[in-house]
Image 1: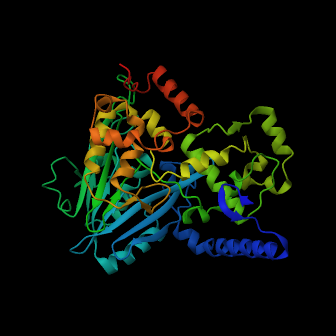
Image 2: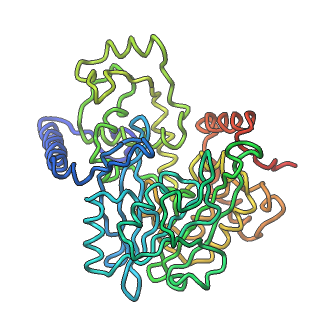
Image 3: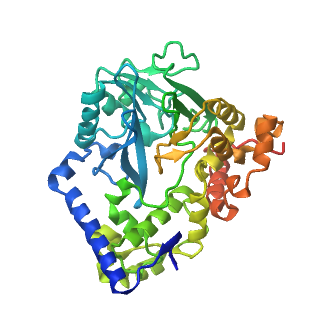
Length: 454
């Protein structure tokens, strides 16, 4: 018998199994105590968190991982709402002549900068900082402070930058005065021969006349030629079955969501962390998957009052758990975990479908690179994937824009024979996101996606 959503992983039985489980649980708690010392917490503090007040607020721990020995590293932090927290990632690339390129900077806490400075000591100074998106506030907000920590570096930003509710100049957004815009003309970009890039967009988002009329989606994908590595920000993700290392440093979020309802006691075990992580992944991607029901009003308060005493602490919202999961959540997660790469539902239904021609043209250009590895800025950091895997992630756009008129014949044939699970996410899980799309269009917040049948 397998554990929830984990094929082939047996439940532990008998006294040996219980002993092993207790040992694993103690190990988790020891690691938590080590990472929770006052000095460690102080170094991970980010005092400017009210600028974007999302979880874990001022507690911005960082995990450094080496992806390609001596050439590529990642710095992971955590971000989210309502304990629905996922990794947000900065990628650091060593340049041939020495020095570092930083893609998508994270919060430069004392802990984060100590990790960066160790890389600087060994591999040379930070030469370039790339702000890879025009719309992702969770990425843009740290660019200015990070650049100020490395004043001799050159900051590059994706084109068509905008801010809400007032469109402000880059300098007013905290970026250095010498910040430069990446453009289609790469002749003046000194790293382009070594780390190539392609710009997706701009894809118009805001409705004309609204406060968000200047809103566009732009993302810069980068290709490190020496390691055949593709760097992306939000466009594609891959979901790991096990909790990422950075999530293990915040177990309360996983344990909170591990329950099926408010009456279930919160217990810190490896299995519960795994279950909690998987539900967090579903929650963050679909907002309200079909297997999740909201429990509101008096019923939620009554459930909280009847919750186990150990659940009724401030850390766990005094027992309040306004959700109820159905067993089908395991099937929804397994479907996502089988995919090498896919586009998050919110981008499928509210963003990229607004500009299918622009997006598919960008996909064509990216797929000319012979990459073998993809590092997204969220979820899994080590994704072994090819240009064909990348193209398959955008098959939901087939039938829209240029693709409706033919597109690339060979690619169209490949997409036609892809398994169904690689083309579409379940309509039942996508229901809430599509309702959100209808809401923003109806209320003239965003433009409508082109009609594929028009």
